Image 1: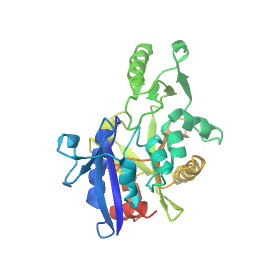
Image 2: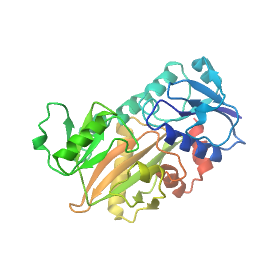
Image 3: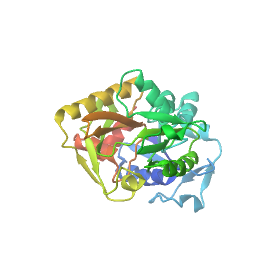
Length: 320
């Protein structure tokens, strides 16, 4: 039986999302194949053993827990590490680099692809070289003349996930306001053209024995203007297989595979697109190297739609 270390939490804006994701993993891991241990990482990057396995919530760190002192030696005692950590420290290559330095097996994209994919600007620069269609954008800095901006625009911190720090501005006043918010999360900020009349489409990728399983195209139907934090993790948004034209679906699946390979990804990813209904144009939006694993998350639902149950998804990820 394989010994698995499941990590969650982390010093990240997405700490709470990780707590939700790890509950999904606990509920669906095959305990006949895997003997697992839970370790939570708090906001100070301290590691703690969770001995009483129960539902994890955002207040898990207030319990009386055993601290892990030598994290490298601790990790080496397991066959595979499953880091269900979203955002900075979890998806940005830091944790992956640590594991690679000490030859520790782990689930997820390698440090190289994690660094590139977590930085939205780096991702755009890489994919522009391969003619992947993307929404027009400018890079914000303090010297930027805001008079050149054509509204509406969407403001995004370059290094942040789960739609955190993202807002839509319709005028200069709103732009200044939302730039201040975005600066709380990253010094580098993207200002993108906002495609109002769009459909947000997603494709999930799972690596299984070095072969890629590319899901059908999913779509989120929610009550807001866009797929924000609330829609992703709190409200009961309706996740469905998109009824968009099959040719567009084929383009999305082909682009997803190409992007996954260009960026050197492995194990799993979710690739997001926008379809401009007015101009009939498809745009790459972003890629997530450790997508959400909550009960309403798109990634497990899309792979499940391919006939792979939740338990088997986790098994395939751990069989590396």
